[in-house]
Every structure is written in structure tokens, then in C-alpha cells.
Length: 151
Image (cartoon, rainbow, N blue to C red; front, side):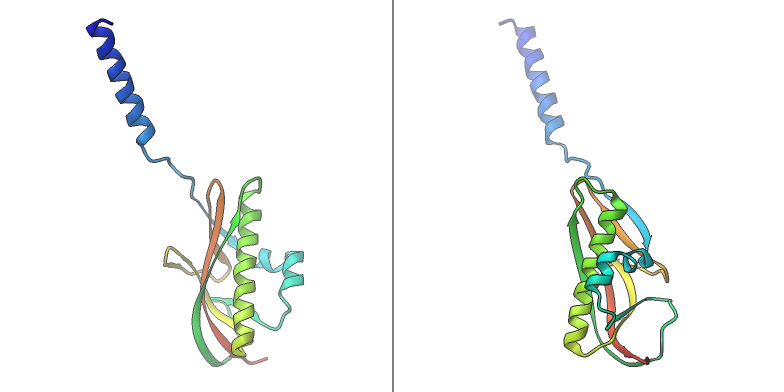
């Protein structure tokens, strides 16, 4: 093997090695979607029994009679083969179900001041939640306070 050929092979090997060792650029699409669309899902009407109401921060709420502890619900779903908005609704519904279950344990009838809490960054909206869709996993993180509100 000639010196030039060896040098070319070495350069090619090093270049390929450098390319394959670079971190992959993972998809992380940020979406802001209406919480009302989640609550209107047929599955939400089955899984959320109405005993716990959900209020986004800034949304008009009934009078808060007693505020209990705050909590975070961080839920993921498989996004493979699903449109981002569909997978986001599933992840958000899962987060709301977790809030409902804990609210019942605490004797609360509402979760108030809900904010998106992706990577511990609060995003407030009185209509929308934030969702992050990757190539495989879709996630929603919500933070809120359990409360008893006036009927």
C-alpha cells in the first residue's frame, strides 16, 4: 500500500469517526394546545368523572375555599405513528388523570393555577398547555395546586 493511499484511508476513517460521534439532533417540537380539546376527548369523558375541575392559571375560577398542596404531573406517551397534537392530548389527559386521583385522596374538588412546567420552566396561559414532541416520546408537564372551590 502506498503512503498516499494509507494517508487517504486514515483521513477518511478519522472523518467518518468524527461524524458518527457527533450527537444526534433530537426532535423537540414545542406545541401550545387548548386544554379544552383534551377535556372534550371521549376518553376524557370516560376517565375524568367530573368530581375534580381543572383551572389554568389566569382562568376564571370559582371562589377558592381552601388551598392545599401543590404538585407536578409529568407524563409521557409514545408518539410513534401519531400526529403530534393527538399524542399531546394523550399525555395531557394522563397528567389530568394523575391530578384527579391525588385530588380525590386529598379531598379536593379542583386543581387550580395549572401552568405548564416543562423542564421546570413555568409557562402560563388561561387556555393552552405546553407539549413537547420528540421523534419517539411526547411529554406534558403540568404544575398546579389542589383546592376546594365553591360549587
